[in-house]
Length: 224
Image (cartoon, rainbow, N blue to C red; front, side, top):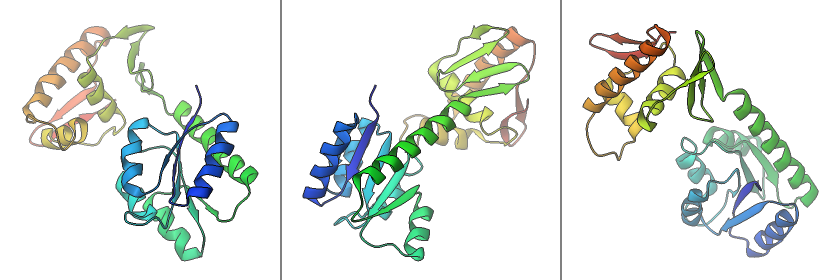
């Protein structure tokens, strides 16, 4: 499957050249001419974003800050000027790299390939989490014990993933509901208690061990 690249830039000629070049390289390319369009294109789940800093309206730095917590893919800024202060602002906004206009297409291709390789290595290395013999496959969304799979619902796995990747940190029900379900979710945090009860029961039955601790008056934490 081809890597998906989103180009967000208001220079029509540059975007056309970049799109043709990257499609010849085998990438699936989508384009946006401003920040608002780029936000709409995020549902295409790009593997890398080329982001112009100086777009009209919603600029590249502001857009990067808005999406960084929700988008994990590499973001490369395209800019006509670059100073140390520019770099600092860009990296603080969540960017991964800069390339200064005008630039060579081969240099751009090399940077894109390097970031995609690095991103794949990070995802591969971080996709399995071990906890006292329990293996949580974050990419495959599976929980394994002694070679067998312990089955969980989508929300149960979401809670396991959240707690195990924040091991030994305590979260109350309201905070967990906000972070796992999302700010716009309908319902209330009381569902967390029931989901945690089911998770504990399944883990205890399969392993004979407790992995989630209730810290009375404070919340829950993954303890193994």
